Length: 436
Length: 143
Image (tube, rainbow over all chains, first blue to last red; front, side):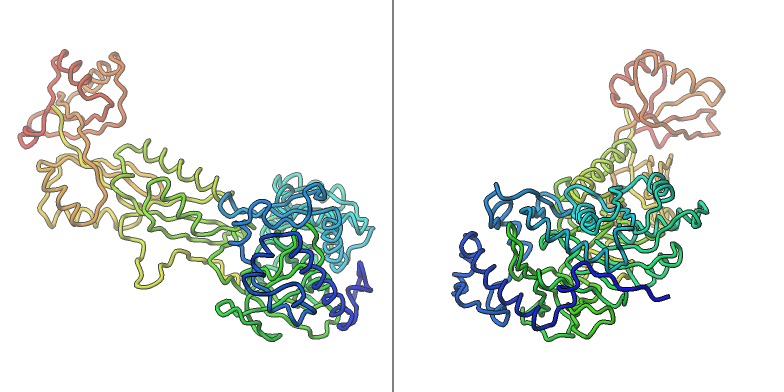
């Protein structure tokens, strides 16, 4: 059965490469001028590189601009990169990180509209039309997942169920009673729901036909598993709060990569060590420049995601460049249950609580759900003959980790000198998930 | 009037306890009493030895995490009702017991209880008042 391809904005999504290039050239020039004039932080960065807006005349000049990193965003927190007066902004969203790593992104109404349109493209690429019932089980709130797909669903005109995450019983009940046809959530939650629906024998009562899953890494095997269990087609979606949120790129019916919305975002792939721009087809770090964002436009933002770009003709008819699933990270960030976790955050908590900095983080996926365990070496200072005191200290550590990371991490106390001390780089993270 | 208990951190995985007793064996250390409190991941091994100083040196050498705590060793007749009596005295005087364990010595017809309480001084005082025999470190070897 071959379904007809749906587009939200066919004239843009299937535009000629020349047209896309023309949009990018024009918008990039305008954007560089905009940030140079309105953001002192950018102006300073450009001045340090000895460039002015006049030096950027087309996308060919993009490489002249300095890179922007998460560190820059932290330094500029909260208003340092704001390019519009606050009175023109209508929304903020934030990354899942914590105080130290939190990034707050601002949106004007225009920004929200464009973001919603990107998500609308993703929904229609997954076969969505106004006849559909879109079940959004991404978290709502500061996290971009829920609001993004919610907005996109509205644009398409779908009946939108703002379920948010959690409460599986209610999720499944609504799915059955209201006939949800498109499920939007993290792939691990989709797998969990699929498992539950199977256990309860409710396969015949759900009407799902497609799923849009993102915010964490997932494998092809996981896709097959979800597709079989739920009887749907599962589509990948990519995005990051810094650039807008989900919908920066999305999968089409071909399921061989995600089309990047190039009329809004210019993608480059670079060598993460040298910063050199790599030719199409080479594996490297993905870098984005947002050319239509008003309030929080980022130029050459390093995502740290490793992937490959391809402009090969796609059978869906879309002409925008496709990115592969991320194949890894160029930093040590872990994505656990859709939440960004840096080993340094865990280290900070351990040191604050009086534990040694020798630790190991074990990440695993059990029954399609991420689990994180922090192994810490016992010290004479932290040890007590009283189980009550030991329990209390362990709980304090668990709570402090939860406050820092936003998710539960199991603590495992181990004997001294048992965590491998390697010659060179310490093995702080053991990721058993094999996601890439 | 207390004895020194050595508490040792031991991971709760197969063979860890044997590794520990191997160390004691190697250094010819004999235990007077032993108790183990455990969770899923680790255990706290509490032991009473004659020479706690030597044992502590050995454990340090072998990279064990441990602590030394003063606990009460109380001698009671090895017969029904005698523990009940002691607990009654402690309870009546508002002394909370963190944990306790027993060991006995058949030949003398006495049993010995180890008590870990918040306030050793107060516990000693109330037990003495009732004529209960409390053993101190120097007399451990006599047991």
